[in-house]
Length: 444
Image (tube, rainbow, N blue to C red):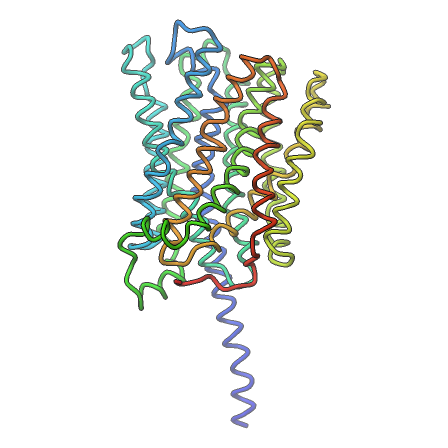
């Protein structure tokens, strides 16, 4: 009888442990997703409103010069991200992931909302663009530890064999943030005229960050620290010099992630954010229609991400990522040619097809990056490598491709850049060992 009782007890106990781990993973995934959505909502509304706020902060320039100036400010937020990633990532490796993720969402949200109350250049002169740059730098500083910390948080909370599925919800936040940005900007264009939009309407999307931040902060305050970090912190001392340790012991992992995130960011920032500028400024499509289109595309891509993340748990990260990067190489340029026919519905189909690689690379990428580093330097390693890749693939690309189009008149330049950025990622994937079946490493 005692044997039967024990035999019946063990499966129940294991089942309860698994259920608790899945519940923790779900809470972590949702908490990570909301903060990441705020980060990309802010970047999205800035990109979508670039042509509106450009003349307000850089008056006296030609429309093209004002657009380039406001895109340069957009890129400045990326340049400071590695600094924020290194400093806050070090704190995350010492104090825990949860505390820093609460700090990042408050810092990002506060900076974003402050942009919504900035006076323009006509009101206070040169101080206006200076303050815009300062706030963008503050936003970039905190964003440098946001999505990387969210990805590490979810990876360390997920059960073995489910990191890809639960990890895909971090980039779901990326897509939802972009969709919300497009939806809000589309609503503004629908409800106010051009004069109202320039006077006060452009501020509303920035101020709407406030309720989003409150929601995310409450959710992150309630979630537990990750099991991996709690286990590590009980028996090991935090790394005192994670940056030096990464360069000395994990430089190849750093390089792998930098190359992959370069291609990933080029695909997102050109494919979703810059393509709005491309369709409206150079191809002449209606802005409001393009905003609705981008909102739909982002939501559709978000819906696909859990499937691809789950598939990578079965087939391996490398195999699935290859599909995504190869898609950028093959699909983007032909679809840009279709967009040039100036038929809105054809353009809708074309941009949907061109965006299909995005949910693959986004959803599978972040769990892959978390698996490249041990727990003691995971936050720091991801923060440094992912942010460098974001600068190369996201921060400078909108400005660069805009300048190249202005100089050469060659409208296919964004597609060429996206395809070229994907090639190094494919090269890395052909040589990278898959880690989807392994436990997350504590240290090496």
